[in-house]
Image (cartoon, rainbow, N blue to C red):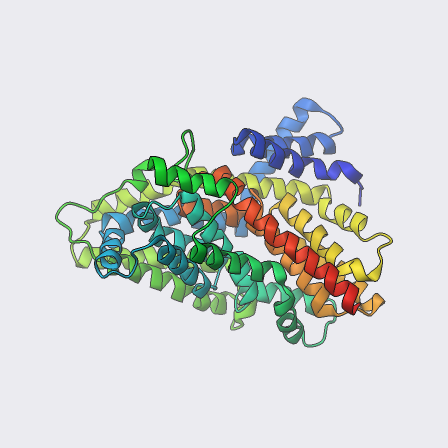
Length: 472
């Protein structure tokens, strides 16, 4: 294995730094991939450009990547159908006329509760919360950035804390691969020690209850309240305006079930698809296959219902499905680029290098805190929590066994660090989908959410140090 040393961290750092500074995420990701190819080709400028294009095209060579890309596009179709059929308008009318949601506190708290209840798959969680609550938040003058934050904070953290899904299956598989007896019991024991995931979820409800914000999020909320601007001037929401502004078809009576039924179908299909794709074992099912099946079947059933009820005709359906897919083309490009930067990081062995640097000559009591910090950095830099788990779990488990440390404690630190990266990184597909489902600017979402994520990570790091001092 060729070692690129400190050069290996340049591509993700270039992409993240440029994205935060310039807010041009597409160019930043492209230049991040290019910088990696420049390192691999040893400075061959023009050849590296060719390799960059090849890296991006290679994303489509993996079935799982293509499934996620199609899922992202079809989500746009589902949103377009739900809006045009009167499903979203019907739900808004219901919750407002019935007095279910009258205040900002209730809206934010209910969005958080829905996010917690939908723990099957992180992307599905973001999709459902964003699609349902986007118009409600707009009406109550709550920023799109706040909605994206709630979507993101109740996706990966919740899926990790209620691991009856692909997340739990993946971690159990990693533990089994390293001869851990009763991996389910080890995972369950690690959950109360997964401080970051717990704090990330609690922060949503604390902020909703107090109705207080800080940092860039406070400015975003003040912008909406004082100026009535849902978006920041110059922002680029990750969904086309012609989808956002789709109205209920003339002559169609708004009905909340035109949204509720497709969403319910989508949620119900996920465990069934995991069971089928896992050959009878839900924990071995394919997450990418399952989410694609779920959205396809949801669109199919929704289309049949709309035809029977005469809400939409065949021409409407085909037009909306295509329009919805095209409206989410920006998201699709972002996902492709995010996969590209992840691939180049693997080629440079970024994660392995960072892990080796963090694990040298460390006192045992600091190991949980160091593993947490290392996994945070790797996941944030690469945009993948599962990839970070795959790198760090073998290192952490081996260290825990050799130093006679608690395996659940070490595991919790790694899992929490991975969730931080999935939650906070602009390279993460969950972050991208959360911005998309709330129709928010991606970098606005990242910069407003980051202080909250860093606060939870800081407290978590302190707790791991404290536990290390007291009990290791």
